[in-house]
Length: 345
Image (cartoon, rainbow, N blue to C red; front, side):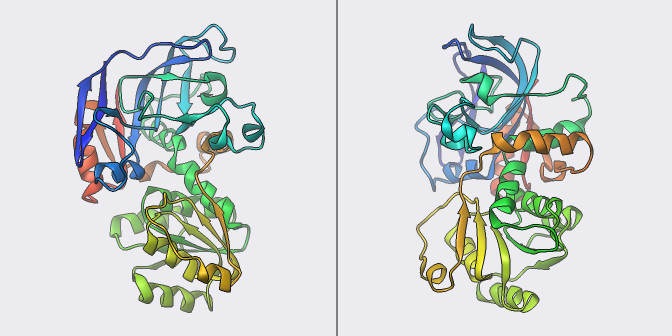
């Protein structure tokens, strides 16, 4: 079968790899129909976070059709269409039961040592706890709907986690740091949760257009000290709810700086480097968040997508075939695309 393999900085290739197969009785074999390239995939692509060895399998966002199941799988059967969150989990351990599936005692992540999602098929461990079955009436020939559902594998839930972690609710003011796919989904989530005012910090016209469609009321294009000063001016000293959706030191320090004393920063950006916490200490700021337990959020977000209450599809503004995945990476790296959808079969 064909899959995306990592070969070094800005070098990903579509190669023939051994077919995905069932290995444990709790496995399912999924034929991939749609996958995504994640902003976090760009860290190893750019050589900034070395998590893959030579020929490491890429991709952790996918959905598809169940082809086969192990003898102990109880909730799925061949032919079921499923969404896969970016981490697999058993669904029953103490952490899964508390909604923290990314800390599952048996869980793990796609790619690296496991099958990657950017390929023709994936072995899904712990299938009953991991995969979410789509209702049979869902029509994936509807391109917009299929694209919206594909965001639930990661970015829609990750933006939601940032919003929930920040504590934003009805009538509140939120500041979203970052105009990538996660930041834009954070705007959508803050709006869904009832925020009255949403300030997006970003610089790219097409992304800010999407942010406004998602509910942003203000935009701050300045960066660094100028951007911080502008947000503080707009909010009278800072916002009580801040969503950090990038992970770089500058983004994290900005998020802390625009947060009101005793406010909360919901941080979901993958940390690239260490940051200082003296400002957090001095102003009694709370940091909440981390890796998003997307599996816990999929049911409620899927319900809203299917009902037409939210439409996160605009964050996937480029579509490629599996053979075109290297171009999808290059487009995101060069900021010619917000996020890339891969149609596989």
